[in-house]
Image (cartoon, rainbow, N blue to C red; front, top):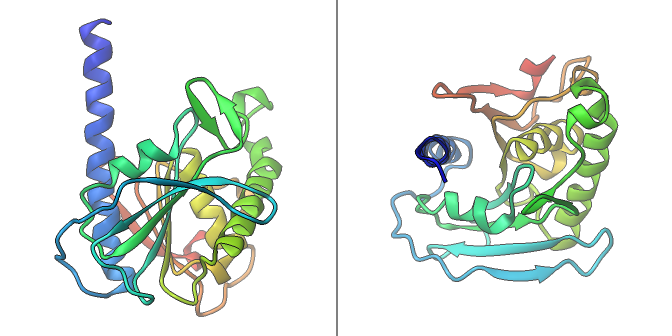
Length: 219
């Protein structure tokens, strides 16, 4: 393996760490709750949702989460896995429950939620696949008992970032705050009219400068 490849991988990990720190700083703003708790993460546990569509997921308890503590849904990117994306967020002090579903499609060494844009004729043609994957994750969230009735944060990288945007727009009743990292949303999925006053807050992270917005700013 060349030094250039190793260096690029290290830079990507460092960027993800920086994004993760910014994301969970945003969680404190979006959800409130106690901060500064010691990190006492339990081992990752694989489970399977009992209802269709079945998505395997891993979960990790951080700190000593109560029923009112945030549930954080973490969505991996193309070719990655839930174990890896949960590991990137080890710096979060909690308390809360991390839940990371596994994409249903095999993609290289990992998994994906939908095809790459280049495989379907461009990013603009991904909207139907993004909607389908988003609906599947929303059904899994409901089956797993995750909802905005208690603070629920959705975050993810790349494809996971796209799904974070889409969940906030298409299933706002499930999301308190969305923190997409390196994601985007096809224009045809952007809301055309004003959203309800209780629309989820969106903290979008791209590069080194995160920006905060509510769902109405997507219009």
